[in-house]
Length: 513
Image (cartoon, rainbow, N blue to C red):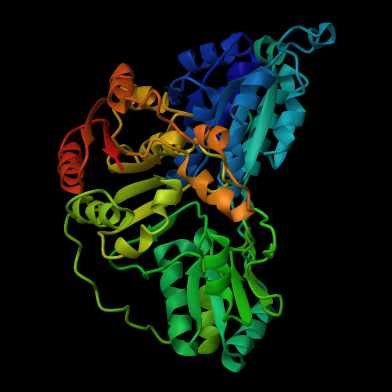
């Protein structure tokens, strides 16, 4: 058994059975091991940022890490943007990064780079294997780190000779550390805040955005008069009928500051105090009042559900009915608008759908119009590094077992970063419907220009224009093996979505807005 084979056996023994890959020369022994050892599903991505984005989407839905296979320092560098998003989503990923043989690095060959340095910026755990005999033990520790709450990126760097040299055998899976439970004293202190104080906000993030935790927070809010919001960017929210109709803290600074202004106490449940995505002249970085007190109920790595259930018990909060169920929206008609598209998606989506949201500025109002949709999961861009939507949707389809329809609401500008994801969707016959929001511009930057007080001229406006020539998304999709069609009205979009849900495999709709 060589080092690569011991690695694959160890990953499988540790519960990692999916590998998103874009391999190179240094990884050939790992690729050969994947061929000889059954049990690992291998999915090819045509660029490393697609590979890492797929691994992120996979974890969000499967709740367990996949492996990635990346080629040397430059290959890892190509995947850093979506590893940044994965870190912000607190997704568990095991990166396997091939590298030059240990004795070859001294010669500074062209692909030599600071692989560990690149990895540290996005990883909670980084290690370079030093011998074939250590690969299996290193791999077991990498999986343990990736599975440690709330989910972490772990990067194992595999020099070529540690893959091809003889190893002793695989390592056994290591125990996953238990998710910490908040101190009961903390629950009592926060219960006192809820009993005695006014203008209290419960801010939910992470695991606290699953249905059972939402309902516990709702019971607390109804018993105490507190309000509930979700963070602006979230890895996964369970939504629709039967869930709390949660809104998020708004993205625009002025709207966020106005929304948070009434609150004197903010209880954090797998969340943090809201801050601006960027700094703007004359506006505060903190979007909550300086006088507001923050009360951490459950930190990111702690069990938010247990914390909320314990707090509800401490308060004696009874089960409270949810607001009256609103009727499911109907397909909107006419020219596309954000509200109309949201209603159309809610009208046609199947039960158990997954929304992969990289709609950017066009989608900021989608939540209010989709509360009455069937039960679904909503996953979104978390770290602000655009180009995540298509690979995230692809990985989510795999992580959900391939039997849930994924609807990718995708801005056209950021979609161009990783459009090769469509090829993987076609190759794997994944149930992904991509709706391209084709406004043919970087629309978010127009708002950001105003926010920072800049004065754009012709040159600046040209850099935000995706026309001249216009992108032909249907042709691009067909070139990747995915059928597509253009919609110019919401009823056309709704019909095309419904048709795509009734078929196998991927489909793309270019919605001209």
